[in-house]
Image 1 (tube, rainbow, N blue to C red):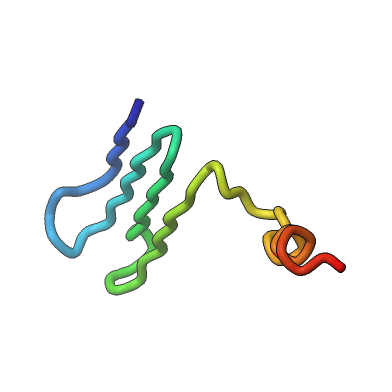
Image 2: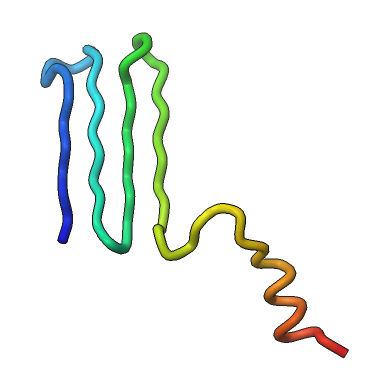
Length: 64
């Protein structure tokens, strides 16, 4: 269950964007603003932002 989306040029150095998304991964690469300036994201949808991993670890392994 993986989808791939592409937008933009296939010429090296020109603006482009791609996204690879599945149930276990999200990858985005954005080179649309200027030459040499990119944004990239790699995310695990099962490990979402906002979860307090440190508190969970402390509660599970260091509780008194």
